Image 1 (cartoon, rainbow, N blue to C red):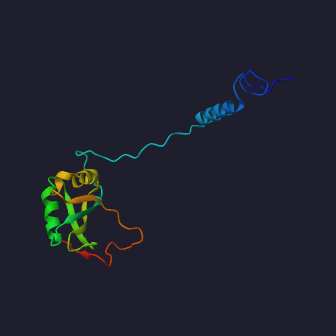
Image 2 (image 1 turned 180 degrees about the vertical axis):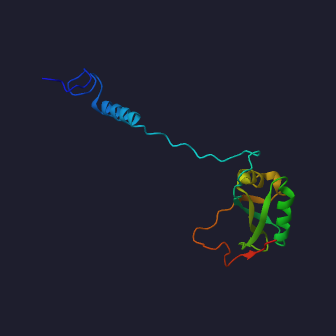
Image 3 (image 1 turned 180 degrees about the horizontal axis):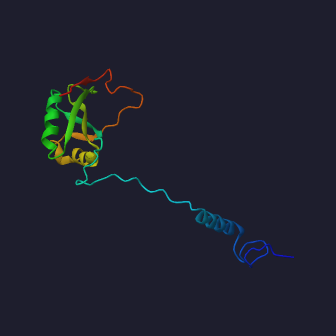
Length: 163
């Protein structure tokens, strides 16, 4: 009788001395290579400045920042001025700030500052506005994450101060 045409090694189709699980994995890998399963390629985002036959849509992202330990009389317009001073060559589309309610409003004030920038400059904007050198001494700054349970960014306990 024939051994099943397994390639000439063992009678059960597996290599002699190789466990059955490894042999089945190797067979599966060989089948995948043979069928032509390809790895997914990462998408490409164009960077050419000379090819101007078509134009892409400019997308804007928002860097949300929590700023606290400010004097209680600090106004939102002062934070907008601070962002515009610090931005340097960063292309800022819009700055919105929202005064948040503080536990001890007579001691300090806190704000949510939303800075809209081009998607291409999003990482640079996060790095810039998260750096200690961008803010006055003693001011507490960190990324702001919107609450999950609030659909609208304007809550009852805050005062918008768009400029």
